[in-house]
Amino acid sequence: MSLFEDMKLARTISQLKCSISHLEYEEEELLKRLEQNRKHLRKKRKDLAKKINKYMEGK
Image (cartoon, rainbow, N blue to C red; front, side):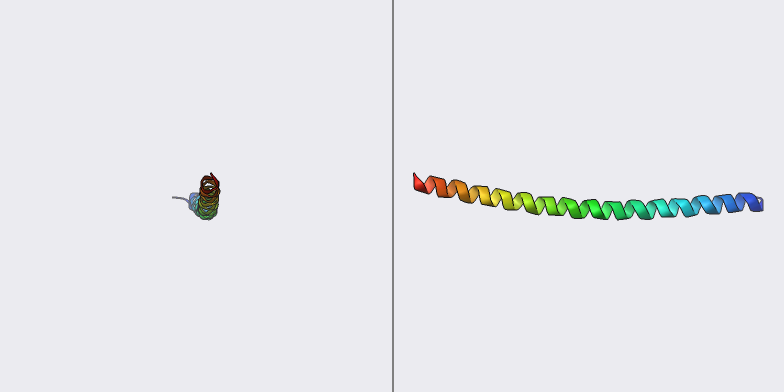
C-alpha cells in the first residue's frame, strides 16, 4: 500500500470510529427517553386505576 492509501484508510477508520461513537451516544439517549416514557406511562396507568377505583367506590 502506498502512503496515500494508508492515510486514506486511516481517515476512513477515524471517521467510522467517530460515527460509531455518535451512534452509541444516540442509543444511550434513546434508551433514557424510553425509560422515562415507561415511567410516565406506569404513573398514568396507576393514576387511572386510582380514579376508576374511586369512581367504583362511589357507586
